[in-house]
Image (cartoon, rainbow, N blue to C red):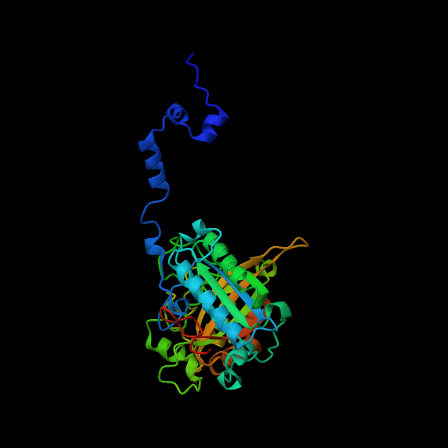
Length: 402
């Protein structure tokens, strides 16, 4: 029997030539492994721009993962402190989004794979007031009116600063979020944080509508960034919205944390699930159509004379009335573990609208009145933010305000 060469621990740790030879790895073999592990062009297709008229995440396809972080300003955070904070966040976000390590990054190796990293900021009422005075606060930048379905928890409601970190790689998100937390500790305190997820990048054809944890196609309707209606209802082009000049190129934003009762939903039969939504589960088509993109026929009746899409169906209640109640919406699923019992699960719902009071509130009121899905969903968190415009090299997010 041929004796297997023994390699000492000292030789392995020391990386001696003798050890390399015994393993059958010459210099060429080692170089080949290194090239395979980290190609020179790794991640080039995974970079999204940071600078521009608008913040990138508002108009870009959503990533597979996201981390939502809201902060409260510290008592001593005045206009000057806010300016310094926003510049620091913007400089770090610009570097990280391009796969570059920010200054003094203690783990620069974690910055090299951006994986479509986008970091976006939203401003609460108090931040705008401290930064630029009462006149700079948009009239809609305030808590939403109370809704009957709400069971809001203070820890998930409100906040002075919103930071959303999105990427297709959760390691990238973790590193970017820790960078922001480390750099802002002198200005703000963390209020709450929640991770969200969608299907893995590349697992479905691009443009496929996401599914929530009820298995429903979620987010079929609404203006697409390529539509003229998106420029109108999100950026406010052609609308007399009355927003302050500093918000030109930005928009309004509503974040709702909605828990979903998956256990009771599991007991509902398929026909009732579809009636509660107004769409089929198989492909998201309206109950009056065959494809997800088909326009619903709200006048169609069944053999009993009842509406095919019931009055209580979510899609009927959310349907625009033609009075400007149009939003661009996006969602991320979430799960929250608990050691005391079943953890929460649900949807982080985002609505972009140049005037959330005019565009979002009417929709939510109709859902509040008669949405069948209210039996299984409960809003536990809510906040409204102003999403400032983007910035140019040398500037920072919020430089139009401060």
